[in-house]
Length: 101
Image (cartoon, rainbow, N blue to C red; front, side):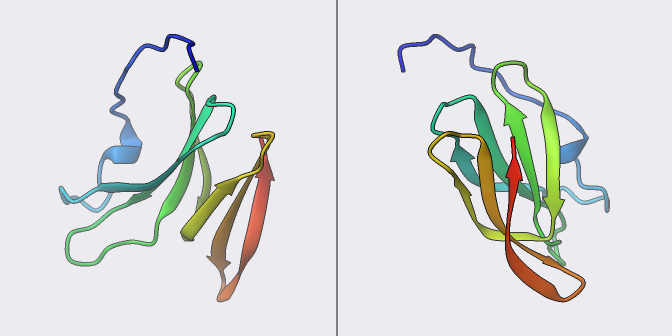
């Protein structure tokens, strides 16, 4: 869109490896259709890579929310940008989940 946005970076606890390494990886970024939110996954660890955590950042105000842990691969927004769908495994059970934004 033609809306002007300030390009910014963020350094918070989410990008610091909680197990002490320097191998944090941000991946699987998905911009919402209304361009207000960015969903992304974070993995930690150098030798043993942790299961990804899924976060959303509100691009209007910079607030970051943890959506889930052990979220795998597919992350998709619906066309109205009010639901985020993702694959998640919990206690050995895997399935497709969604969260209303």
